[in-house]
Length: 162
Image 1: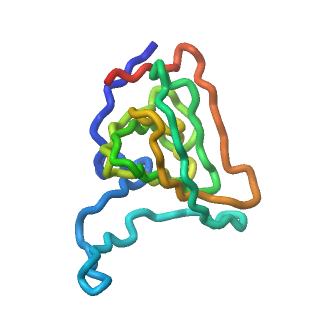
Image 2: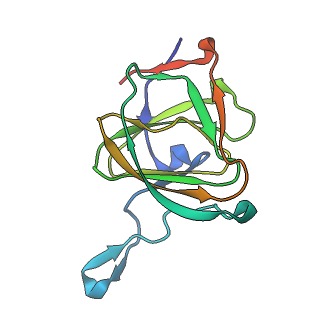
């Protein structure tokens, strides 16, 4: 079985898969100087086939053992995740197109970083490192089949070493 050591999540390293969502860069002062707005941090893509954006809360539990066995993609939309409790988590991805297990990469996201997966990018479901971790999720609701899953063959499954 293959083994991954997660890499730090950076905008440059993650660019093939989507955007990293985090406070940084230029901010706008709003609310009479009491608030800094970090504006337009991710390109949401949810309108295909009459879809609309929805906001959800996901509460996720860690995998034990930490073995990657399933990958999914959303062919009609992007999907954004933002942790709400400041806890780190893992992001496992592979490029859009036909799934290739040898193209998988694993990143360690800090609790202040979210991700926005591009349409069609393969990713593992949430991989929190602490129990009952909450994430704000922005994705698509609407007609059409927007979730493809692939179960990895035993030889393609991978463990993640922390």
